[in-house]
Length: 332
Ligand code: ACO
Image 1: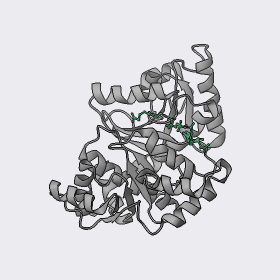
Image 2: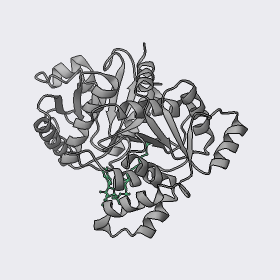
Image 3: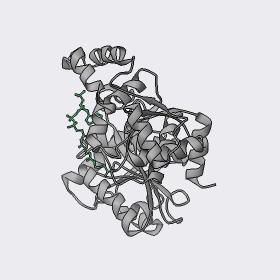
């Protein structure tokens, strides 16, 4: 069975409540009908119920099994606003400001999760990454012991690479210029994502333009430091670097450039030194090599909230709801 099928079947078993804030968006509604039919998750659509139903009808999308909630009138607004004020006490958020923010489904969704009324969220079909992530950063926050949210892609590549052709790339979506400490946290989160979602035994390569000191530059030094921190943070994980991409994934090059490494030549998790490298890197593999890319799977957040590309398809939304449900059912 292929990985996506496994992820969907596992999602069905978990039966999680996933909130979709873009409740009137056509691809979201078409995906919702498929998700409900295949019983991948319980769905909560946010928006004006009449508009949601009207749009679904126009699309011939059967969303009868979904719960539709209007963030502007829902009875839980008052309780959510109180919680928001409490969570943003240090920033001086007032109740009126909180109530106003709750009119925005991108705030209402995370507050449902924070209050235990939903298990995960997927948005971004019509909203920019920052607008999806900011409410999550502010109210759902990061996992204990983790200070940084990052975005991984599951890359379906040639079978001779990674774990039967599946690799995890990160960070491709969130942190423009991570510090060494943040890069180390991204490496550990990525290993956890690889384990929890793909079920692989992670071998994490910390990528650079240098392998084991072959080049001297502050940018390579950052990756060297990040590698040391990550190894200290997670001594049980195979994390190594700094190394070039070819040393990470090509056995002969790995043996030549980093003969002592247990990761070189066999890496299945690639950690990029910056968002520029990661975002360009995954798109190169996707577009030039024709690899399927699923994500970004956001990692490091206290509850699963995922962001879609605005160019996403109906299938992307279905797949990402299944991934979000799997994250909601896993330990990280
Ligand atoms: N992890 C955890 N918390 C974070 C992170 C992070 N990575 N980044 C910011 N925060 C927190 C901050 O600590 C702050 O918290 P506070 O309000 O409690 O103090 C809050 O979020 C807002 O922080 P800002 O620095 O003001 O962040 P801003 O909202 O300006 O930017 C953003 C965050 C939008 C994610 C920014 O880093 C960004 O634009 N990243 C690039 C996203 C992007 O465009 N990706 C490429 C497209 S995605 C794709 O192609 C798949």
